[in-house]
Image (tube, rainbow over all chains, first blue to last red; front, side):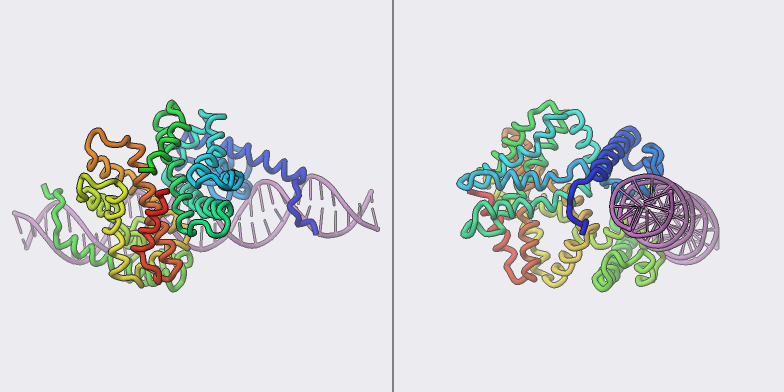
Length: 196
Length: 196
DNA sequence: ACTAATGTGACACTCAGTTTCACACTGACT
DNA sequence: AGTCAGTGTGAAACTGAGTGTCACATTAGT
């Protein structure tokens, strides 16, 4: 039974190749535009075959959106780590800090990625689709925090969804300002707009 | 100059054909599953050529999602029609009544459509993408209501987004309950969860 | 009745994504 | 050392969505 999820040397090499491919793809997309670049172009630029490229990323979009992978779990974990007596809104707001860290570490890269995603319809669509699954994950984390006897499930879903909406809108404004506005401030403002 | 947007006899015929094609497509999708049905199947079933089908609906998805077309404008108009002194949340909640009317008129059909969209990934993605453009439209309507000196744009965007989130979640729970739960109640509950 | 605009079908084409097969490499076991 | 299974890669054929072009028919306007 070798099926256990052990991290082997091979996995590390795989991850490195994957990162390299994503990098090459991203630069090509930025230079030529996502839609103008074909899978053949990508494969040629990366020095692999079309087959190989598609084995690393099931779709062209995933070569870009892989950057966002695992963020849902990160936020959900951060949410579960918040003190149990904290109200949902504060906990959600704090949990989102786990995600916006990225944007402070590499603002230029994050800005470029966000731009590419926002103004490429197919990327935007896929991104929304993936984010759609974040909401149930956050709602579940909220339920874990609240334990039995907390608010009904629909309330938790609404709050999780609203928090994610705040994140998206804050990112939108941040991107529109070329990263000049402060993301933390924007996110706080967004959350504040939900009240009253 | 015949370019003016006059409704001609042709337009009426076109709309009828469009509705007919959508109907045929919908039944085929429900019976066989969206992904199993090819454009050729659709064309054959509808008795037109593949070209013609694609002229009526730019994509396979649009044959289903055309049912939702114009809802954004309907909600935005309803929003603008609300009294100016009403608070944003109440106005948004009331404006959404313009949309859920459909679900009361033909619950079975609405349920079937919603189901099909929700559990077909490509349809779900396109739907989310289209709904994405509703938010700015609603935010603009809120801005019109508030006039100058109202809340900042980001606040209106957040509220519009949250309201749409409520709609989606209410619809989700309604669908999950096979239409047995009351949609209006669900929507009220959703809005209530935003407060406190 | 003539003409111009428009709807339709046929066809060729590009590209994404799937599947299949063959080949090369690596690591383990004898 | 030599076989053997597992795995990554490349080549190729295939399906299906969507685009573009062209010819033909129908219909509206004069």
